[in-house]
Amino acid sequence: MPFATITGWGKCMPPAVLSNADIATFLDTDDEWIRTRTGISERRVSHVSLGEMGRVSALRALAAAGLVADDLDMIVFGTCTMDEQVPNMASWVQKAISARNAGAMDINTACTSFLYGLTTASAMIKSGVISNALVIGGELISPMMDWSNRNVAVLFGDGCAAVVLESSVREEGVLADKLGSYGDYREILQVHGMGQRYANRGWVLGDTEWNFDGQEIFKRAVHGMSNACDTVLKARGLTPDDIRLVVPHQANLRIIEAVARRAGVPMERCYVNVQRYGNMSAATVPVALVEALEEGRIAPGDHVLLTGFGAGLSFTAHVLRWGERTAPLGESDATLPPCDRSALEMVRGYLAAKRGSRLAPGA
Image (cartoon, rainbow, N blue to C red; front, side, top):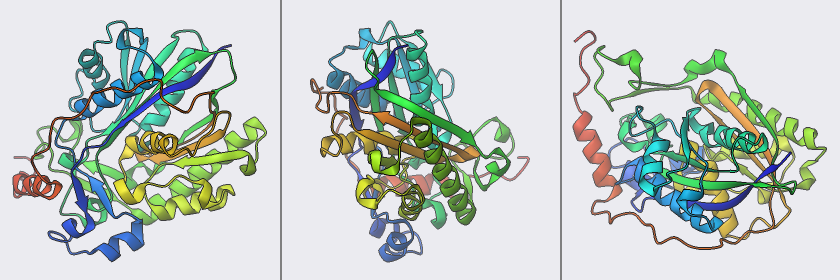
């Protein structure tokens, strides 16, 4: 049976930075309150579509793998904030990069969407259905954010990253994975106003209300991620000492610390960038993985542990054995168009557009 190794990687972060001080200009909060509770100092707000971020990430990942778009057999796009539901985001990227020979599918398990996509694409390669795949994790959360709700507005940001998987005879890539969901608790992390349930029921597109029970989410996230990590380590006969680096979902620094503690891995072997980007949902793990490679935190043959949780409440863990290459084979000149507005200007625009826009129930 072949394996599915990661041979390319690339990220696309929008340039506009929304600081904690910026948020304090329209919410009753301050930098200390946000940092002490979340570990977040700033996040990004995108001036372009999710598809555009996906295009740039895809081309950078392909260049790193030494492939061109026509080489691709499959594109898997993990997201819960698609530009449109029909047709899907993966086909948008397929068209944008001219990947004429690829299949295209989306996966939505919220913050774990990239990791579920990693399992899906790896399984298709291992079973011989395809020989390679592009897996993207990206989110454009800012237009759908309830910027009047301090409990969620301080947490989230926009971003995107992608990896290329290729068939390999070497024992590399995803060696063990665990996917799960606490469906009975799905209501504790729920965005009202997105989906058919709200059509013609008094909701205006983009004007959302977030049900976010932070304490319960914390408990379920730590429990699910820790148990999943334990499961995949045991499946491979590994101990925490065998793991070179943990790349966790970047939701909240306290959650990362709790998961690392329960997994028995010291924080110096956990990659953390939540302070720079906040919670980018499906983009957090792939962006962190790309940055870990850029910073030399992963070496050939290393065991890497990925773990995440998201709405649903979905949770995952993956043990990877890294391949023989940690440097890109090439670089892409793909880039985003210039941004002519600050992040705060964009957010204030969202606030102004939504003010009073929600219709009365039944209207």
